[in-house]
Image 1 (cartoon, rainbow, N blue to C red):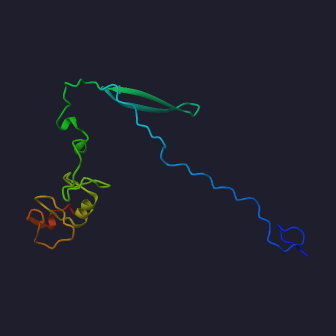
Image 2 (cartoon, rainbow, N blue to C red):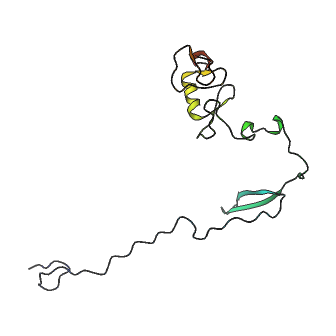
Length: 166
């Protein structure tokens, strides 16, 4: 007679139970148990740290850091005007959609004249080519001709959009 594995002799009782299964590995918390803040600002002239990465001939990585201090004194005002801001309207303040006035969007789109539009308004404007000539409202639905703007009451014309690609 064959005996099942785990049984002793010819007894027909339940099989022997071995030791308890191993405990699952402990999960580490995602956050630090005792978070700490960065260093206090000691030098008011401190402007930041620049890191430069170089790969050495032996394929190791060398990180070179340099600290920079503000070059102008507090009495001097920062330069103003368009030549002082080559980055465009982004550095002047938060961007705002010309149509829906939102400041949060995953992607900013500019109209052909540089007018900032949020992702949704920019897609609608490109698709339908309709906007208010006065306040830049891009209607939410494809409007019928001779419809008035819901914001300022001006005419929404279908030929005011971007140039059509042929």
